[in-house]
Each structure stands twice: as structure tokens, then as C-alpha cells.
Length: 383
Ligand SMILES: Cc1ncc(COP(=O)(O)O)c(C=O)c1O
Image (cartoon, rainbow, N blue to C red; front, side, top):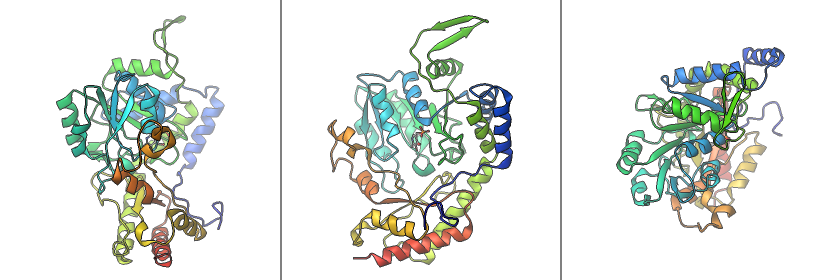
């Protein structure tokens, strides 16, 4: 069955409603399609959702993190502590500002950076902590900020995957230092491409605007000044209109994802998945936004590699994904000295992790189909 086939189940798919499509058409007809009133409206709706903190929209969640690092004053000679199990954007932005990522292994249960190991990685060059809420399961903010405070470090939360998740009883982004979200199509809400940065005060928000667009500061009708070399990271009004339509459905999307995740746990339990060696995610329905449902394959019990499992799932009409291979083993990072064995938990997860379909428009029956197909593939390929 091909990915385009009618009942092929992709691992994710955005839900864009007719009202949003109509809204986009109106923006396209309005005569103003790049950053304008829709971006302002999106920023103010995001700020309202995040307890009134200043929010600025960008054209990606990568741009937001790079700008956050610059606002935090991170540059050459500095170190930033982060996780080796993330989308490579997380550490690429550290390199982009001329600093060095310092990886700390993950906690094999949460698959997020192991906060217990962070203090030992802090040096006089450390400027910031850059944790990731993998699959939308938030890193423990209490412990994270206790470490940051004790060592005088800035925090840039890579919350690309945790929009709608909760930490300390409030949505991720409501509290904390600099918080970065992505609105890539796979994320829980999308703006086609885009991201936003949650800032501490208006001074930081003005700086974010400068970094977002060539460093330009306008005054009056014809005044223009440039003091810093900003980039070209502004969001279009078309994208912002998509984001507004999505934000209005956040609660519904999050609830549906959680319901599907519960069905996965139930289906896997009924099928004896743990006994079959499959490692399930943490069943945290208080904090997580169920951005992804990821399992670890029992590779040592299988006669085939993960790619064959994926191919057999694909043949059964089911899409799966890999999020992610361990970053430090990419050629770019190996060239800088990292090697196999440096972070065993991240490497194990990077080799065995598999993302199963999870998106709001999925049907309950799809979950049982996926769980059944995966267990069947594992049985078929047992050593
Ligand atoms: C953990 C993580 N960090 C950063 C990003 C970068 O976001 P974007 O693709 O919007 O640049 C993503 C998403 O792609 C992500 O999943």
C-alpha cells in the first residue's frame, strides 16, 4: 500500500479546518500577505494563552532558538548543555552562534536529558541549559531551574514539541526563562512552518524583533536605525492565520491525542507488548501533550534491523518514523570529537526508537490496527 493510498495511515497529519482555509483565502485576498495584522493577532493570542508573557512569532522553531541564544548572550567561547536525543536543530543552533554544545546523556525512562548528570557537566564556560521536552513530555522544571539558579545559568527551553503540555500546573511557556516553540506541520499545532519565542520582558521582545528582521528599528514615518546584524526570520500573515485557526483547537487536539495514547497503552497491554520486549513511553497524562507515541524495539531479540520493521509496517499500510538518531554520532559532531559509547542511553534509544501514528484525526480503530500490526511484525522477525 503506498503512502498516498486512501487508507494508508501516516505517522502524523495536520488537521486544518474549513474555517482556517477560508481565513487563509481572505488573507491572500486582503492585499497584505507577509508579516502584518495576522502575526500581531497570533502573537497576542499566544501571549494570552501563556499568561500574558511577551511572545514573538518567527518563521521556524530553529530561528527562535538561535535568537534566544543571542538574546542570552551566548557566543564564541561559551558552552551550552543539552541532550543528544533531539532533532539536530537543538545543537546546530549552538554551533550557529559560535558556542559549543555539551551533551549530557538521557534518562532512559523519560528519554529527556538526565538532570542528575547536569551539574557535573557545568564548567566556567557554561552559559545556558538547553533542555528538550521529547515527544511533549516536559523536563522537570523545578529541578531544571534549581540547577540554573544555583549556577547562574540562562535556560532556553526547546519546547518545540511541548506546546499544550503542562509543567507545575500551568501550560509550558507560562513560566521559565526563554521558551521556544515550533509550529512545523508535525507539531501539535502548526502554522505550516513557524515558531514563537516567549520572552521575559519588553526589552527582550524588542531585541527579538531586531534579530528577527535585519536588526532594523523604525521610528516615526521615515526613521530607521540598525545596531545589530539581525536575520530574516519573520512569519507571514498567511502562516499566522493558519496558526490562529490551530490555536483555537488546541484543547480539543490535546484531549484527542491523550485519548489515543490511552488506547495505545490499553491495546499494547492486551497484546502483551511488554512481555514481547517493547518499551513503552512514560504514561504521564498530567504533563505530556502526547506529541508522539514512541516505543523502543527489542532489537536484541529481532533477526532484522529497525528499517525492516518499518518496511513491514509500511507494507501493512502504516507509517512510522524515527525521532531521532543520537546527534553526537552524526558526521558533523563526530568530527568535533564525539564518538560511539559517549552517551549509551541516547545511543540505545537512537537505534531502537520508533514513532507510531498519533494525530487528532486518527480513529480509535487505527490504534488497535497499529498495535496489532507491530506485535505481528515483532513475532514474525523474532530470532
Ligand atoms: C525538538 C525540536 N527542536 C527544534 C525543532 C525545530 O523547529 P523547526 O522545524 O520549526 O525549525 C524541532 C522541530 O522540527 C524539534 O522537534
